[in-house]
Image 1 (cartoon, one colour):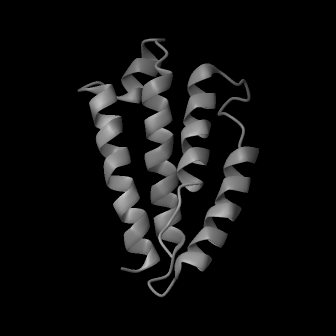
Image 2 (cartoon, one colour):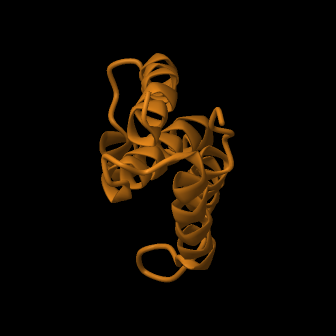
Image 3 (tube, rainbow, N blue to C red):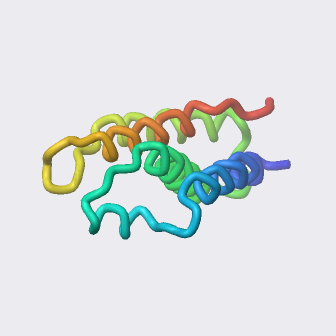
Length: 108
């Protein structure tokens, strides 16, 4: 299995956890209602980061190359500022989920 497939394999349970946490409500709907749901945003961040990681990998990427891409993405995610500039619980949870996902191990 190539590294892209391994990241795809990691993304599937992250997406399932996000769906299980959110039920039939979207993050956008909660935000529009002014409600905070950090647990849902954490899983959303995981799914987003794993998707970004997967898209940046070439089909030939091995585990070492994939980890290098993940380190670069993690630096980007750590430096990201929330839309509008003000940090909040949802944003911090989203970013934490993304950073956790980018730190997930890949088989050698």
